[in-house]
Image (cartoon, rainbow, N blue to C red; front, side):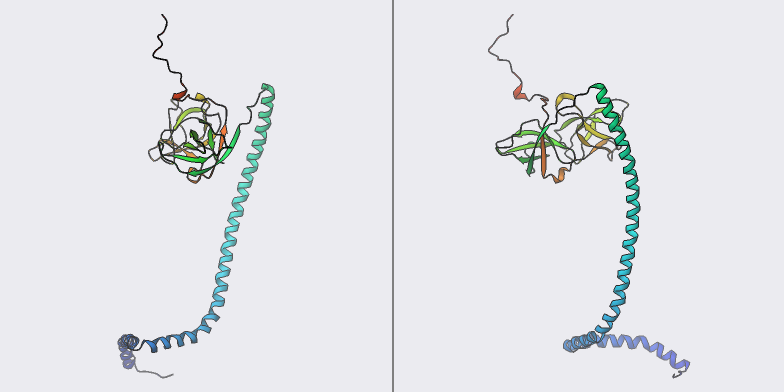
Length: 289
C-alpha cells in the first residue's frame, strides 16, 4: 500500500471536487458532441452489468416474496380473529332470534293471530333516471304483460325505494323516497315513535313531526307506518343518522344510486285518493232545501 504524505493527501482532497466537476462537464460535452458513442458506451455498460443485476435480483425477489408472505399471514391472523369474534356474536344473535321466534309463535297461537296474506309482486327493470316533474324518479319498463298501477310500492333487494306515480303503456315512473315531494309515514322501532320522512333531493331524507320528548336517536331502525293506508307497516327503510346540523336524517337501506331491478308490490292499499278520483259536485244541480 502506497503511503502518501499529509500535504499530498490534503492537495488531493482539495482537487477531488474540481476534478469531478470537470469530469461531469466533460461527459456532458461528450454526450452532446457524439451521442452515438455515448449510447454505445451506455449499452455496453448495461450489457456488462445485466448478469450482475440478474444474480442480485433473485435474492431480492426472494426477500420481497418472503415479506409479502409474512404480511399476508399477519393479515390472515387478524382476519381470523375478527371472524371468530363475529362468529361468536352471530351465535348469540342466533340464540336470541330462536328464542324470540318460539315466543312469537306461542303468542300468535294464544291470540289466534291471522297473518296477512303474502303480497304479490312483479319485477321490473330500471331503464332510465327520469326527472320530469320530479327531481328524483326512475322509469321502469313494464310492457303488456306487466300490469302496474298507481300507488304500488317499489322495493329493491334491501328496502323501500319509492312508489309508482305515473303509468304508461310500456313504462311507469317511480317517485323515489329521496325526492322532495315524497312524504312517508314511518315508525322508529326502538321507541315506537311515529314520524314523517321527508325527501330533500339529497341522499338522505329528513325526519319531521315526531312526538314531543321522543327525539330520534342515532342508529334507530326506521320502518314504514300503516297510517293513511299508503304503505304497509314494517317495510324496512333505513337507520337514523344525525346530520351536520344535528337534524335526524335517514340513511336508506335501498341503494338508489345503483338501481337495476325493482320489485313492484301490490299490498291492496287504497291510500290517499288522487284528485281525479274525488267526486266533484255538479254546479248545474242545485241542492234541495
